[in-house]
Image (cartoon, one colour):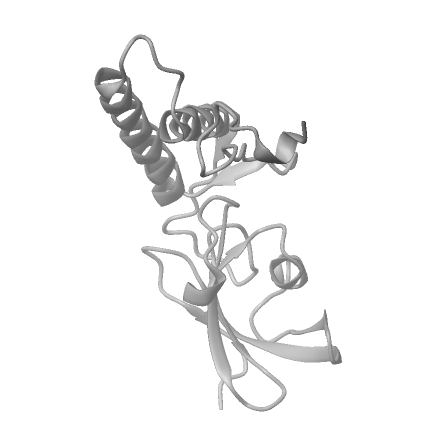
Length: 175
């Protein structure tokens, strides 16, 4: 008989997905460390809730298995976390945790914050420190131009200012 017509003992949702760490150092901002702790705590409660609803004679459901895998990931990330607290830093060069204002070749101004991998949200301007854009910015100073490879070719970005939470922004060549 073909296995295509045999019902398996798995959920329709498929197998849970195990998140993988990047293998790079897990640098985190103070906010990122707090977010990791909050997520691990939330998943601990979620797992306990799912376990309490499960009958003893049934296999672990998809949601429970996913919560366990996610909790494992976040606990591992917490153990690997390296806190980098640059709050109040007075510096003109781009380091982890910096807020960087850049001007693109077309004149558009953009703002980015260099953060850890679990904090990254490119749509909100939060860049993973290991991303190509963050790598191009790291170490550069206000007023400098950096090159970035994009799909359409190399582009130049001018760093307008670099600041850190709790510090006054350092400006380069402002118009």
